[in-house]
Each structure stands twice: as structure tokens, then as C-alpha cells.
Amino acid sequence: MKRSLLILWLLSLLPCFGELPPSVYADLKKKSPEKIEIRVDQVKHQSIFRKQEMVTATVTKVMETSSKLKVGDKIEIRYRHVPLRGAAGPSPIPKLKAGASYPAWLKQGEGGIYVPAARGKSFTRK
Image (tube, rainbow, N blue to C red):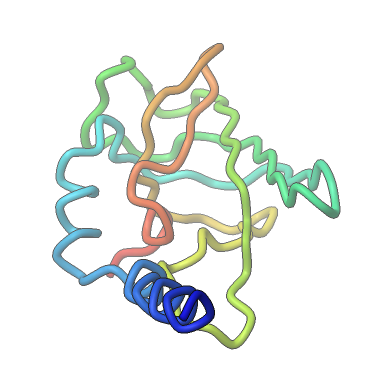
């Protein structure tokens, strides 16, 4: 009996790990306080286990900003990169590459560091 209940409970959690609908990402992008384009200057990986990405980037275009960003400003972006491994789930935030340019939907976090505002779609046009 306990085993059956445990299995049912675990199965009920499966929908919690599915991909978010495109409308959710679109809404997150719409509500993002920082809509900019960036050129990645440097990428550092903090730890194998935490998968923390630390990105230094230059702002190349500003569409909207609540923190008064300007073209040419240097910003630091931090986020956790968790790749999907054969399972369905929310879109992972991609690893950014030095020298590449990306659109960016961000919000300012503690200490002036920026974080992705639209989860796995924070650096994609779609």
C-alpha cells in the first residue's frame, strides 16, 4: 500500500518538470526590466558541481532599461547552467560564448550583477 502511494506521488510530480509553454517565456521577456543586446567579453565557470557561469559583457544596444544602462557599459551576468540530460524540462539557460553577440532579457540582482529574466530564453530571439 505504501509503495503504491509512493509511486502515485512520484508520478504526480512528472508534470512539474515539463517544458514551459512559449507564452510563459514571452510573458517573462515582456516583463523584463532590461532588454538589451550584449557582446560577451569573457566567460568564467565557477565550479564543476554548481555550474555557475560568470559573464562579463559590453552593452551594444539598449531597447529598454530600468537601471539606466547605456551602450558601451560593461556588465556582469551570473547564472546557473544546468543542461538537460535526456529528460524533458524547462529550457536550460545556454552557455554564452566569448566574442559572440546576444539579445538579453535581464534583471538587476544584488550588487549590480545581472541575472536572466526569461530563464532559458533570456538570450534567444524566439
